[in-house]
Length: 330
Figure: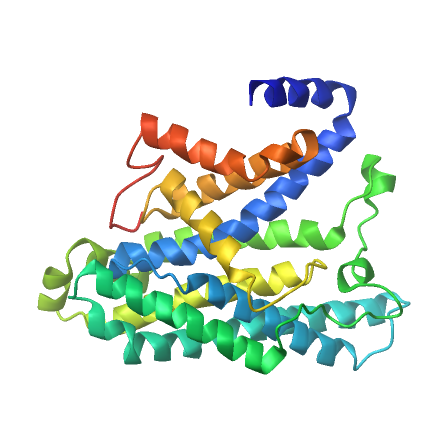
């Protein structure tokens, strides 16, 4: 790891454009992880449940986006002028938002019908139920989309992210980089700021935080904990679906099995940042995303090990995580 750090420092001097590109790749990956982990940490902070099926919400969002984007973008020819390019971008945005929005009622039904029954049960029951739900969702997605991988249909022989490559990065900054990834990084930053605003500035957000801190007291003053729990679970599903939809637009292959890796890395993120902390999930996701992409660049063999090494170091130094509140939304 020390050798990798030395190589990285040297490359930042000798190859600054490469360093910037891989740092941007890390930010892109980090913001995708943040959107997944934010839902996971919100659910844990309020409901006290580690949802093992959360990664499948991400996979479902990705597959829904592939289907929606392929249909909607097929309504227009390959964009060749600013007006058609704008229309194409709007259709992609609609596909992303609709795919994520579908996860709201799906998550709400799952919480109401299944998860609500185990709030007061032992953690073993929670893990068994959510793991069983994980397997059911995977099989349902395989029945609907098949066991293989899927990408949005090409437009004019180009992938979706190539079509929206409208920022002249090479002309402006001297290196080539995906405009879609830049837009995705911006979207992740907006999600982070929106979550902070929601929990700190809105009445509903304060009610959610109050329920997380003391459910009995919140109920005593007239707060419906059932409604709060449904809202929180639906929010978690929405952000996971949003991450999947955005990620699948970047030319990755969407599949029913893609949620497992995302779930594991999201657990790493919230352990590093602290369970129940939005700010912690953000910092942890950026650290994990950038570190893994730097390792891919300099020491590919360490790409998978680096996030877990970071987690071990954080647990040794600060067991509660960088911003840990353990069960309170912060």
